[in-house]
Length: 435
Image 1 (cartoon, one colour):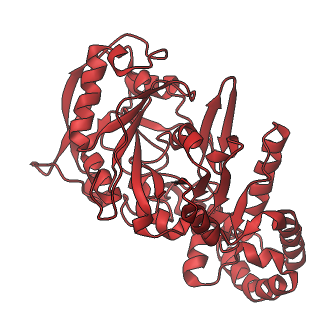
Image 2: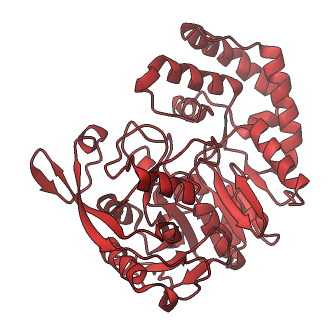
């Protein structure tokens, strides 16, 4: 069976963790394909809430093999802490596998991230200070360390001896403290010994699962509009959350993907700096934040909230070849007399309906809204489409028409059971046609 990719269609935080957990019954492997511990996937099971950062969401299903792919940057200390926290709550991490080729986030990456953001001050990107960007930069410079290096203490020492003087020189230029070789090396070796049982050649792990006819799900972090190439540069992440990133970071070929499930909220949120045309700095925006619990799972930062924006939706559906959509948090809009959707922009007196990727251009646009009547009914107990209030159904139908692909799943709450299976999820054949 070919693979399914779960990808965010907005600026991240769309609910990919719940989606992956929801689909878990039908898959045998969940592969995280990019990003680092700057991501946060929240899964609610009954009275328990799990906030996952590096470990794939499939860890909560005992039959799933969770895999951290080669496209992820791994802070070994953070990963080990997350694994220990899961074990303490009764969740076994014995099945977890980590790509030997995944790059490492070292302590000097974290220090560099913070120092660079501090130097930029108000002009900063708004990073999570987790060292993600510097680690990906080292990968591109071909000076990075990989998980496999942790398993070779002598080789690791040689590499650190070559790398550390340059890193310390950069840190000194930013006025930050340098790192000493011995404690850095000793900590890395300890992490390597702890992770040794989990390190694998995940490429063949994934390929062998597909060859056996198993269903593999690939989950990304962040979202399309934060993609390094396709997002609002420079206010983006340092990797490729789009579906194409699943191939490079997860170790599969394009023709092995037959479903791309796009995830979006019924409104829009964004964390950190960067343009946000539909942002609401008023009571409605604050209500969305409070009712939707819009605070970062990783940093706790409040998310910026606003009306749904259909202009980047069309772009995100196209760049990901999305076959269908899961719509999350429509329940948060209950109680509003009116719900707005941005359907176009005005910029310099001209109306445009296409997405201007450049952040400078996007910062100048004014949203053009289409208004929909709201609904006041609570949706937490709704389990069928026909049980939704009429205005909520019309809102979903309108979003589906704007997206150009089916909205197959609707979420009406954080728990796995608070879900409506609205339509069958279409898949693609080997020629790329939607079946």
